[in-house]
Length: 315
Image (cartoon, rainbow, N blue to C red; front, side, top):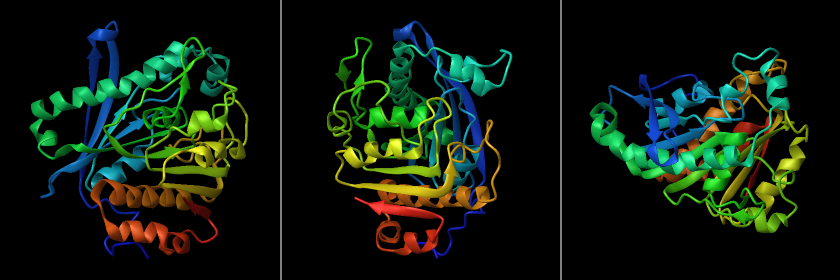
């Protein structure tokens, strides 16, 4: 069914351990960037690619554990970042449901820009971390890295991939990170609420190969637009290689493993399986150069596996 016989969405082939800590950016008033690293142990693999994850609005480094563990167990080091100003600090300790608190919160442009700048800083820190933590570092390959994220984290990935973003004066600028080889966007984010510039100008500068994921029930919990509002990001992206997957009935939170105010639904297990399998195949293609994974994704195997559960568009 999959590109290799040993791929199993319900099995983690290697034990995964976790390390948590904080990096402190002295150049930004000692801004703290918490991290959580998932890494496999008891293996003979070397040069493991590194994948950076960025959480959604009101989230933390602890989100999407179901996905991080699965990817790490298959031979990757997965680094979850946390962004002060747009993380759980928005709602923790405040009365009411977190989503209601977040909807009322004012997110200044500076908070978004700080979040984006966390990523290059994090990558710089990983160089020192690799040298100081041999049990993880001896396997990490910082020359082969990918980035992904959910919702606001997807937006962060879009910016790292070259998308234009309005600065504090409303002028579009780029904060691109060239150390990433590919990316995955879970509930990618349109920019119509932040700029009235031509979508071609905003998204056309995205140069990184990426897998775009959304679902037909992927409405925004904050802005309330439906999933079709997201599609121009994919359609106008300038990268030559891109893929779009739309889960039938998939909602906003299935990509991060939590529900918020959303009801459970009977397809959650199969959708989480699809998210894990498609993500692994994509990373295997772009970060490990597995031709079998590429062929499976692009030449019909993936579409057969998805059946009626999702639609896939290549290019």
